[in-house]
Amino acid sequence: MQLDSKVMDIVARVFDSHLPTREEIITLLNIAPHSTEAGFVMASADAINRTSSNGKAEIHAQIGVNLSPCPRNCSFCSFAAKNKVFTERNELPVEDAIQMALKAEEDGANSIFFMATGDFSLKKFVEISKEVKTNLKPETVMIANVGDFNDEEGRWLKEAGYIGMYHAVRMGEGRETSISPEVRLRTVKAARDTELLIGTCVEPIGPEHSVDEIAEKTLIGRDMEPCFSGAMRRISVPGSELEKFGMVSEYRMAFLVAVVRIAMGRKLIGNCTHEPNILGATAGANLFWAEVGTNPRDTEVDTSKGRGLNIESCIDMFREADFDMLSGPSVIYSQDNVLY
Image (cartoon, rainbow, N blue to C red):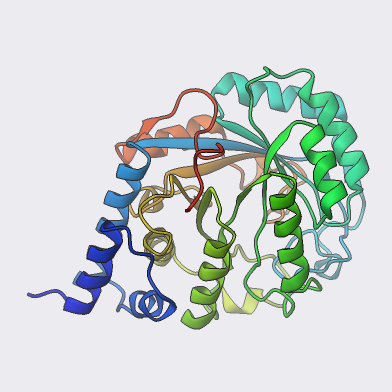
């Protein structure tokens, strides 16, 4: 059986440092599931990924600091007011955030993300962050996962000890959310202007999303010049308007993770999948998140009692996929790791 020469050519040129065009990304996305070409793409992404990262995987811990019936009303989010999963406001006590961060540090997290809902006061988030930071090792990497912000607010994050942030123009942005893609991209510009490194992801992907939109969001992410990209599937929120579409399989997500890895070229160190799974780790992902506190994909107030995995479980998955674990601060979130 002979592989499709067009697919082979696209992948071969990525190994030679070519960045695939939109049309080439769509060609890869249109490959038939379970075909020889699909297996070739996944194996190639795995090879690129392991070479770029020197065979090292990273675990980043994420601590959700609050929940609320959020007025941003993203259809895929359990925090959305319209989804009626959470009807009361709840904030993680600062001392609990400190203890969770210290535990993540002790367990070997390569960075610690702090996440808040889109309507949470950034000033308060910064105050909490500063208090947590004073209790951590100086070299511990802190990353912000918050709502949109401007240049001044970006400087607040920088002064609080953050070296980077997570942000994405999500699937259905402006359609399934009340946030326009332009607002999201203004925040990315603010992050660049304040020298915050940017991590992103093609997310949250559902069965109803077209290859055109997946390609579009992949290229938007690439244009951010991120320190990592990747892909995440949408987890169905009970009672939400998107629940009827169901979820893509882990196999399909592994293939999409592979395409995104290839689309980002061979130089980028980091590529994620979420939620953590071994298939993704064998198809181009070298970054997982362990989660505690609140979680926009969970109906539990503390996701460690629900969907969230701990650091040990994530490490076990990567070891089953024959990865070595990076020890110490993240190299994905480093000034030397940008797409270009």
